[in-house]
Length: 401
Image (tube, rainbow, N blue to C red; front, top):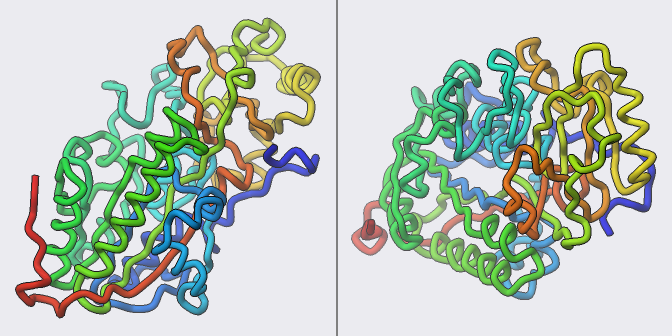
């Protein structure tokens, strides 16, 4: 079970206090770009490495603490005094929204990447925000805010260490532009790159995505997911011993994840009353955007979903979601991208429109997007590396491709 013990509305992410939107700007400020807000009060350091682990929620990290001894030692120590031990992901709790919030320092209502699949009002069609970016959408116009990297780069060198194919992706151009990109196809190569870069002062953004991939395919209770977490633990231990002394290493994630059994994966497009008056469906399986035909009353659709699923879901109308701050302050250009009715999963259910997505999508076990604690809460771990002095021969990593 997730949050089915309460009928209260879901908790609004803590934008501006302790959210993923506050992390990169705080890290950049700590590294020397002091014109940016250090909302999280990260201690100053001229070398900062931010490790972002896609899909590593705080709850699942706690569940598997015995298998990740290095990360467990950080949580037991309580981290740095004054730093929160958990952050909130953006809403929806999906990579496109949270990484855009990380990269811009803004909530989704400002940067406009309000889901995995999003309605483009200008084209009148639903477009993808990750790997299948629509050719008719200019990333820089779709997300026009300056990124944290663009704002920080006049003050401190900024670098990205990641998988090579992400160097020129539209997602990178939209939300993470402004860094020198260092790509490697191997984990050893990425670790070596980070070590090489931080022989000099600077900020490194280090992205890991194998936890998310394992969770989607095999589930968070699988041996494959556990193995991916153990690899993250190994990576952090390597960084701890190889990065120059006193490099500040921060570890967080973009969202958590829950397993949805096959019985909970529902093709809602096969139920007429759930799509009556719906012009476009968007979002993700655990957080749907339902865009209505002109003149259709959102309250009637809300009642249809609540009648069928009861307290297995939360239902929000657009005006309520905007008023209550789920997307943060919403720019006028962004408002039409938000569904008239939003369906959030509370229990282990996920909703698919098989008129729009391939049936294979229903094979994914791990899902996210909603605002249960398992999806919303992500860890914030912090430590100082204890490697050789900067510039020493033993401290320089050999870069691999």
